[in-house]
Length: 380
Image 1 (tube, rainbow, N blue to C red):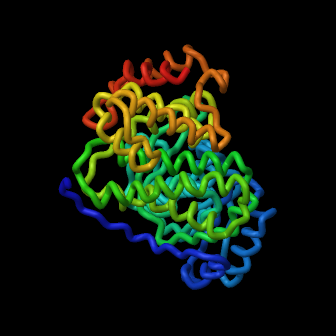
Image 2: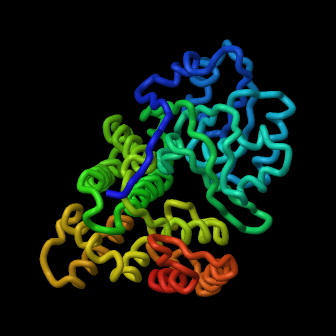
């Protein structure tokens, strides 16, 4: 196990009816800006629950944070927050709303353009932030990361601020989510775990088993959720899997490789494909192209999660990749770029972008522009 220092300060509040706890978590002397995405929270009752809980608070609302939050939208939220002199933020939505609100929290205390902070990659001076999660996927409710896009330049970058002070997870709010969003959320969660797992063997037994527990849970509950999305216990397990998949716990002391996510971000920026869906397409390609570097861990994944325990080294890897792709397809997601109308022109552009930036990413810098092209060509 590698050396590490770990702290996660976010208070997790889980369960039915727990949105009412907002009144106790946010001091009444705070002026709260509540951030939202579209109007779904007004249809599923979440908006009414939030407003009721904060009836004794002074609030201002900002609507319209889109999937893959854009700096163009977030600038407007920052301007409103400064005008209203807000000193607490509440993100009500999925990972995109929470991610965007993390940048708002930093932008409110920054005199320049918030895109500068995104390009810098981090900010430490922020307004306190709480969340009400409505779509499990990114783990943003219990980590300090965000991903912010710029529509003008078709760029998308990771950004790190401070952790949410608290996050409220009520599984009942997921019952009305579109099936495709749930599928993308499961895919996103699954790949989050894989990118902290598919690296080196023998680093940590406890982290391996923890990661495998999340993966096995997702494989078990995914088909049941497809059959009945109104099962409280299933959706509770899904919510917790998404949160635990990227709150730092399974990353303690082990190598990580975020090459699939880096490639997926470019696909989203260029083509608008939902983030979790891009990962379902890219991950099998990453596993295949980097089979030499990741072979031992891929075989461990195959044996412990998919029951692949016989055959030659290469056949076990092939079968594990096939079963991984089969899992994504069982969610109702496509796993080929061509199925989404994406061709070599996009692949060439992604290779060009990585080469221009001099980007080498993934475990030990394994992936550069040429490797990214090979991965994408594999899943064309």
